Length: 291
Length: 254
Image (cartoon, rainbow over all chains, first blue to last red; front, side):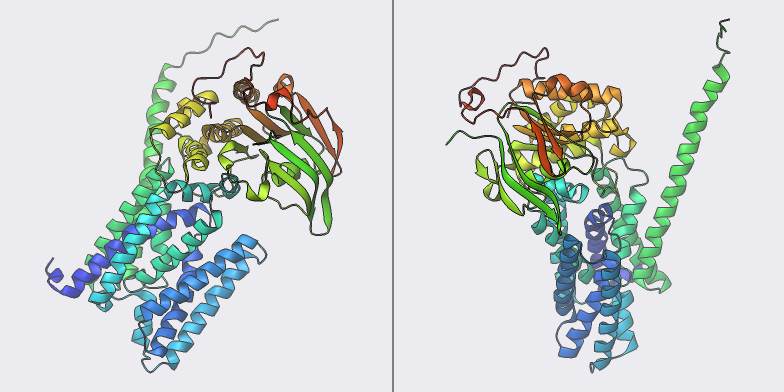
């Protein structure tokens, strides 16, 4: 564990743990709505925000948060109206966001491929002390909102019409989910990178729901998987000198596969255990054929 | 407070684009009534209840709920809505109890955490529809009829005064239809009002006091609508109806 003697490694680890915990807590609502890819769309839009920040010589994190929130709320309003096909709206957003970002980063004086790569795929060494404070504060806010409002957010994502008839502030809560998604994407961009952040929202949830029965159980297990892969991922990335974001995501997907295999094996074993006594004890039934 | 009907629709018009779905519909439901809205597919019967619930805007006309114009109506906990089927957004597993617990939100509000009263109401609602033993099972493992009963329990958990049900018996097995009729009987015996859209009434027949037939966006038949000042609307009126089964304890009191 000697690499954690470096401050930047400690910072990267704390940042990753916060994101590992809060990204699945938010992502479960996106998955429940079958909008798993929306985080990716917001990530693409946030790149434009990074470009704006570099161009104006302001903090890219700040501009990315603002642009990502605008993008996320726009997506939500489009979805609510149901006018634009969600599929095409996403395509416009993905490519518009990434093209705008790459152009703006190119125009800035600060241009370099390394810089762009750090935002797209994350980098361990880029988390500054100020960044870490922003990550911890915003991450805690996301986590608190997602946990405290769980009954209402669950109701809205499960059955939006019913929630509306219950008198819940449906639009406000939907915008809250959109804004939180944008915030999560932006705080995760330093560690995991804009192109991979969505994986941390979705993969732990997908892994957990293979073995869980309820929503709360899925949320708890997904957060555990998120934190575990984030922590292990940073350590492994430091040891093997790989990109932290990619390592974290590969570990989470590894968790998904391990749980899938484990669950399938468990089901197979249980079926066999149940099947054996039955086949052994079965007696031919008394059949009386009426004539 | 003036005496009023639970639901009052006057000259309601609903259109999708240029296509009128409801033309000049008037309907009132008094407290304690059980009204069935009947009609063929596409007649506009579901549109009517969705307009009453505020899910579809009126092109013209007025709707009031419990004497308040729908635009200003905020006491949604007085209404329990039972949609046709479990919502489409169910990518993540949810237990029966978790779904039924959503029914408490209208009463509790968004910001308060569930307390002992909420848990008790959820358990009582599960008992009322006969799903107490499936409370911790994922909704997706239930049969269609059991899923329907889950939605009825969700509506009952909030302790509503009016139940609005969209085709509660469509494609539901006989056992679930019976359990549902039983739950509705208890609800009505305790003074509840019910408005239901149905294709066929089945075991609900004896419960329904009035039938409204919607045809081609208009009301083709309606039993007599009692005046708002009828004995059901009197504040001190004790709803005692000659039903054989008493309400299960604790569910239907609002």
